[in-house]
Structures are given as C-alpha cells and as structure tokens.
Amino acid sequence: MIRSMTGFARSETDTPQGQLLWELRSVNHRYLEAQLRLPEGFRAVEADARALLARGIRRGKVDAGLTLRTRAERQLHATLNPELARELIGHARTLAAAIGESAPLDPVDILRWPGVLQEQETRLDALHPLALEGLERAVAELAASRSREGERIHDMLEARCAEILVRVEAVRERLPRVLQAIREKLTERVRSLVATVDADRLEQELVLVAQKIDVAEELDRLQGHVAEFRSAMRRTEEAAGRRLDFLLQEFNREANTLASKSADAETTRQAVDIKVLIEQMREQVQNVE
Image 1: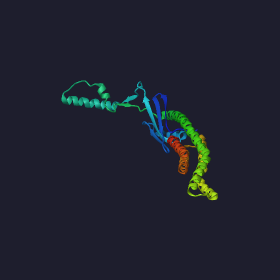
Image 2 (image 1 turned 45 degrees about the horizontal axis):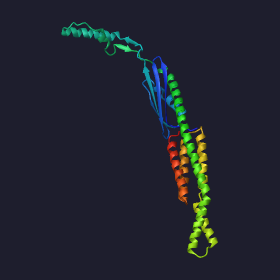
Image 3 (image 1 turned 90 degrees about the vertical axis):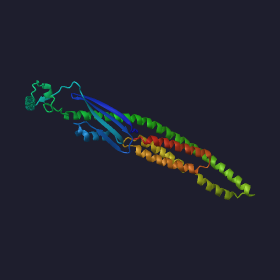
Image 4 (image 1 turned 180 degrees about the horizontal axis):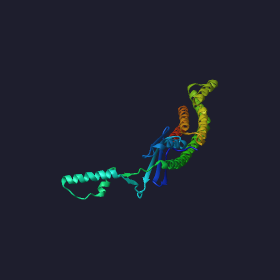
C-alpha cells in the first residue's frame, strides 16, 4: 500500500535528568532529506539517528528535533574552589584596607564569582540509548501517520482509475456509431457532387478515415496503464511515487492522442474528462512516497 510523504509524530521519554522529546515533521521531496536538530551532548547520536530515519522512511523531507527538558527541581551538584575563594577574600581585604573601608564581606558575593562554585557537568552519554529508543518510536508513529494518509490517497487514486476506465469504455462503445455517422456523411457528400457513386472508391476513402480516427490502440494502452498503476499502488517492497508519476505521463500521452484523433464532440468531451482525471491524480501522486 502506498504511503504519503506528509506526516507528524512525537515521542516523550522520562529520565532522571529530564524529559527527552522528539518531534518529527515530513513533507514531500524527491529523495530522503533529513534535517536533525540535536542539543549539546547528543551530537554523537547523529549518525545512528540518520540510520534510523532511513530505515523507516524512504522519501520525503524530514525535520527531526530533539529537546531535553531538564527538571526544575533538579538538585545542584557543585564543589567549592577554596583556593580561589581565599584569594578573592584576600584581595577584597587588601582593597578595603587601601580605601579605608571596613564593610564585612558577603559570602554570597564570593560564591557568585565565576569559578568559585564549580557545577559538576551532567553526563549525558547515558541518555543516548534512550534518545535513540525515543526516535525509533517516533519514526514508527510517523510511518503510521504517513500510511493513514496514504490510504486516503490510494482511495482517491483508485476512484479516478475507475472513472478513467468508464470513459475509455464509453469511447470504445461509441466508435461504431462514429464510423457509421462518417460513412453516411461521406456518402451523402459524394452523391451531392456526382450522379453515380463508385462504391469501391467510397470504401477506400472510408478505410482511410477509419484508420485516422481509430483509437482502439490508445484505449487498450490506457487500460493497460490503469492495470499497471493499480499494481504499483499495491507494491510494498519499494517506494511507488516515482513509478506512479512516470505512468501518469504515459496516461497523458494516450489521452492527448485520443483527443487529437477525436471525430465527434462526445469523444472529445470524454478525452478532456480523462485528462482532468489524470491531472487530479498527478497532484496527489506528487505526495506519494
């Protein structure tokens, strides 16, 4: 079954350091193009993340962003740099004596000085496997979202295929009447010009006209293209979008030939309707993976 290239997914993973949040958005594109936005400390997972995306998505432009939402109540883990603190206190006292000020030192002011409190860096390496697990869930959800949209596109394309076949059959059934009308018109015209009609010559002319307006081959090819189109939509081993787009080019070629060979208004109308249906299908196929 075909899949759309448009979709959205997210996954959340709770950790002691906070919440890991993945958000994935995808739109149509000729190839797979993944844009990853990773916070500091997670650059090492980029290659694995791209491999995960490639396994779950074949075509489309994917924007994947990871966010680490740290907990507000997370405890501060810091150590005091006593040497720097003593040095700052000594400088403060020296300066106070030089300017004749004897105001007491505020310990908080000392602690605010850069480097006095050294916060221990939270190691994020342990979160890398959790981040990849969250991405795997998000990719699965995105694929499911694209599949649901693909089902809607499939139903629309299937309905258009059925309508094309209805019009092809209408043109096929009308061909004998069109030829009979041309025969009668040509016979009447010849009789208005000459007293006697050469039956053999008239048949020759009718054969030439019939060959010019014969669209049986175009109708057969349209039916064959519809069958191949339906078969391509059912394939699961490969992305079908490019194949469907190519087949629609063949659809359009036969519809143009059908319109150019048309010998009556009804056949022309059917050919135009077929071209409209093909254009509607093309718009949807542009979003098929």
